[in-house]
Length: 610
Image (cartoon, rainbow, N blue to C red; front, side):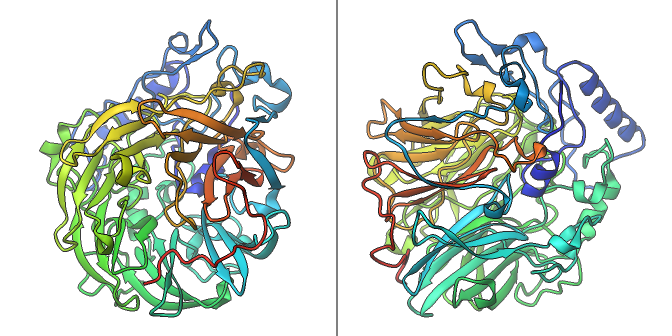
């Protein structure tokens, strides 16, 4: 049985969407190619910013006998697949055989002895979105609060008592219902039209006597919202959808607020800034007219000091993007935040081949024409040390463009000093996350993408160990171990659990406290939280893990494909918060993180004192 499961949630998560399904046989590939052939005959695409630098070379359908469970209990991944994350992909010995009563999804829990579940807050009440969310932590009047949100859906929790978390505020656009096009263009219960809670960095400002929050505002990452449910849901075959997406009116940029308390009513707007560089004044944008480019993606990198780095495409020309439902190839901007009420653009950077007119450079990339790869950044630069503290380097994860190391010491003149191409790994997202927490002491950074398909219907997403001690010559020196279930478990490989399997991210730089030397904690989708010991980079190992059930009693069928989607660590209180499709888990590990503090923090969270 092949059951549609992930469409609605993953569209809303802003991560993945394709309306054309490519099955295990040849029919899906023939269908999609016939559609594009028909589109080509009709003279599509019409938009000059939809890249056609290479002919259609999307991966063919996979021979079912070429991948799957092996005799030794391991799983062999397909070598490459087309974007096709919306369906389950059954294989012999997989979840549908092992867990038929739960439609192929594993209801069991796997946990190492050195990880403790301090609390679990289950169900829709504690879940703003079952597929994706961002988190932040702030302290007010001796209480600690956590924000968890995905655009219009958000929660504010009082987490002062880890074992007695309370919901302080719940935000949504729930009364709008189903809306064609962009649902955020319509006002809802808690939001004005076009407003939302964008991916945020929150930093303490002594100058302003409080927390300053910068929120990213980006165009939805799926042209699907303007295409309807046509099987030709691809920018290569739907010029009407592309035109409608470009004509949508919204802020593409970021907003800056001062937080006077933990609730939305306490936000004080300081500035609204566009990243569209075709406009003369980014602080005086006409939001009634379409803006060009992507806006600011994911969590801005700002430590409360003078300089902020964001992921952005500043015009429609930044468009050399294979992904079939996204329009932009994003580079980076750096902004002067000396006055948060009036940010100033200092520089913009991209790698050759990302912008229209650079097709020759683009064609040299082996992904050209695969209609599958995410090309460009999804996150700002990863910066080990702020410029004001002597930091010199920013690490750029750019999907199919690989990883670059930028000299950021002069923020008005970003320069690439080193670059690393990575082996193609499609479908799925490549070069998305870089953990730089170990760089200053070991010279090592850890680069990974993440999976988009269910049942491991794509190449495995390695976490590459990269020696960047010579910034001009970064090199892959190893890979972190692949997580495996404990002996005696129902499954011998996590691919059998159902849903996605692979690394997402290792939390955020905005976490309170300092990351621990030699320890990185990744959320791993159906493998839950994985604790990696990299004390000896030559011998990395998995030191602990907690993999909860892949769904809960209130989890909708369509929401099971991303069992665990986020990890956020309180390094000061030694608590790991794990975000799942069935609420939130609070974890501790005295042997790995230290003894947890389950009560109020001894000091309020102040990531910066600038």
